[in-house]
Every structure is written in structure tokens, then in C-alpha cells.
Length: 117
Image (cartoon, rainbow, N blue to C red; front, side, top):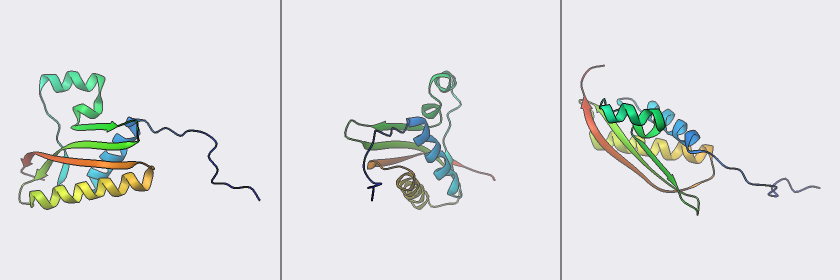
């Protein structure tokens, strides 16, 4: 019988895929979304790196350790710490469910409290 777990090559996951997983994870948490700066430089940056313009910074080092920084906006009236923790845990869960990677840190920075909706 053939061993199906035998490694036959390398699988690489691009940062764009990781960013898509993170965006989807943030969208699952009610009252939170990625903070997007409306500045001129942010618009220029979006031409070259959509993830950075959306408030994401993703790093995967040579030992396959994953570090992400997320800039977050939280709806007014919600507990900021609790909401940030929910986002952090959702990102961790979705990343681990989707790819085999060692999560080093998931840093959440709350940049805005937003009213409405």
C-alpha cells in the first residue's frame, strides 16, 4: 500500500492568499473591519500593495513563522479589547484551518472608533 503522506514537492502560499484569508476572518466579526486610511499616500500605496493599503502587514520568515499586523476600526459602543481579541482569534482559527504555518504573532492595532451602521 502506498503512503499518501509522503512529501513529493513544495507547496507555497503567496501573501496575497494569506491576506484574503485575513480579510474574510475580519469580516466575520460583527462591528470590526480593516481600517483604511483615506490619505494620498495610502491611495498611492494601494497601486503597489493592496494589503498594506488596507491595513495589513504580513511577514513569513525563512523558518515559516507567520507574523501579521492588522489595523482595525471598531464600531462605537463595542468593547474595543474584546472585539480586537475576537478578530485575533478568528484570524488564527481561519489561518490554521487553511494552511500549515507557524503563527508567531497576530498584532491588532485599533486605529478608529466608528459611529453608524
